[in-house]
Length: 165
Length: 138
Image 1 (cartoon, chains in turn green, brown):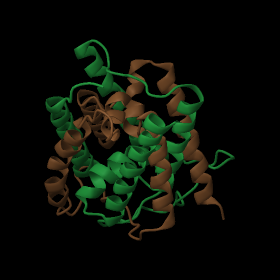
Image 2: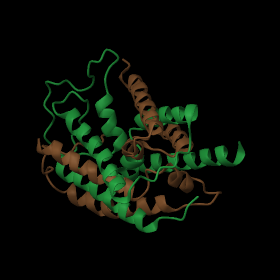
Image 3: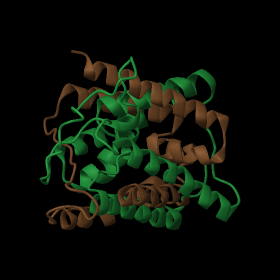
Image 4: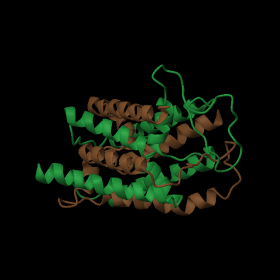
């Protein structure tokens, strides 16, 4: 495919780690992208937000559970983060004059992949960033198991789609 | 307001990192997952670079009583290895292996303006929504 990008990988990875650490330090949140996105789109079929009672105050202690997009301001910071995510990539595109983007699936397969990624990350409560980068840093056994499973399954999927079928 | 601004700036840093590391390029990701092909270890360096910061950083930050701009740390509360975690990780792995996109890179790659990326993101949101219906079923 292409030569490994070791410098870009390490540097970009460190920036991702720094961003995850800053979100925890500043906002007290885990930088799991599927979770941040999921908190925006967690609506019920009628469009009414579901989850925590909006009247309920979030408990003010460390490690307290928080859920639901109807806590005031809950949607705003998530939307701001995702806007930034796109903006950060746009910044790099501006600096290097375009983004490296070589699509590996198209049409119905791309659609199917998107559905599976969305469904699976929601069911598993996390993706590469939430389980992989943040969960491992919290020494979470759930995240370690999830990361190993999705890595192995993805590698098996690539093996089957690229070398067998 | 400060916490919304910080989320935007931190998101920008994250998206910039995804682009610099070329993780927004599905070919890089598939190259890493293709262990029997011409293996591309770049993703490993990205993970390593990120964990080099978060592995020591997270415990230091969590020693604080509270974050700088919020009342409390909102951390995951689930601790059991349950069927949802395992099934979800398998389903996610299949999708990731087909397209080479996970949620962060897919969203960041919207910056390219590619309609294919937008299609993937719409499908991903639909998938998340479908799974959230399962969760909230009484």
